[in-house]
Image (tube, rainbow, N blue to C red; front, side, top):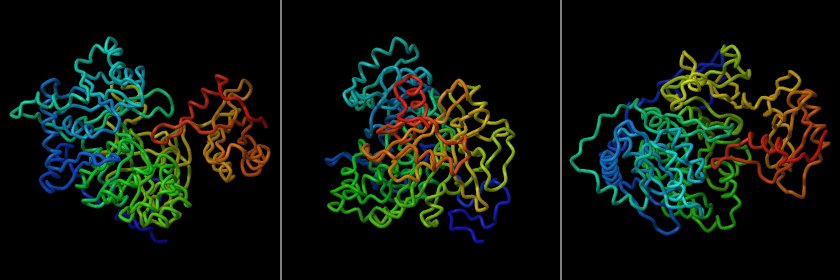
Length: 547
């Protein structure tokens, strides 16, 4: 059996669920500042950053972006010391990028803060990271961010400096052009990004320069971004999918980064047409909106060639429709914040079955294995276990949380993902569930994903989440939360129950059934099952049926 085409040079078959690191692409031992300086020397006049508003926005060449980033670094060093942490709390404004690279040049760690956070959430992130300063927008979606900072300040004794985005130009003048920059190592901390909160309390993940720089380079190359391409980016900048994949990945490939203020399908199409967009990272719901948009034929999207997607399954139907209607490929990627982003991905020329049913093969220079969660032993090919990674991409750790770090990274360097998956003899991986999602009913271990896949065979369902509901007799009972495509056309619960009983062990069939218009997700599309369990336990989400 021949291997599917891949960016990897591997030609042999695996004998167990372990992928040794490949070195078919060079690992660049650089800082983020090095990467920007290299790009500015190579293509100084190429557009590096474009403000993707509906109206024509500002833009910066690589030479100009380097200049403003160095000014930012020297202004930061007038107020902060290398090694300190500075938060950035704002929606998608271009200032994110020179602040990111300014921090990199100054040896300061950037702490990203979700602009949708209210005071309590923002205070948690700044307190947990011990931020010495914060750059913030004035308001977001009607929420007064400046007032929230003022209210939180007494509870943040380490917060010395508060810099409004509106004052950034004046702030840049504080730096001395002759001020020297500190030495920065590729292994030094570069960013602290808080986990998205899909399972509860957030932890601050510490990236290093070399990890996030190379991850973005390898991921974008595998997905199809070419040197000098145009990355149209509607994703929120506080997240790795935007700050990393677009903000850093574009620089690594000397590409143009078109930063949209937020997702808007029509503005996205306008930006692709205006700037000749070739590449994007979009979640499946965004792609769906493009395909059905009534104004799509009014825009020239012919330059768009490659999309990467993650956060949820990309169906074969969507892959085919994107190719036929947009002329673009979709590459599925998998990763976590703890891995500094994606660690596997499909290639545009992989077969349709691999594109739709797998998360691809590991990126260069990373080891990946499927391990027995209890023993840590590598499992046979095709068997389910925990996806674990080892290599340069693993996080430094959780900031100021040594016990949690020790639980996540084993003594021999393997990072525990908490995700369940399998690997075939070619190294292609599949996701099968989450260890923490596991339901224990009467002593039986139940993995929700296999139940969800059975239920999703009913085409009237847009989505479904299977969760464990506390139960005095069984410990946990299996609950299914349905999201129908049409609220007036809810599938017959008896039929769904019968389907589960016929295709799964009897104890896996849900006994409690709930219906929601929209399942709770993070801004980047990740399902938040803990919110469903909380709502059920609080009586805010009541059973639609019992079986």
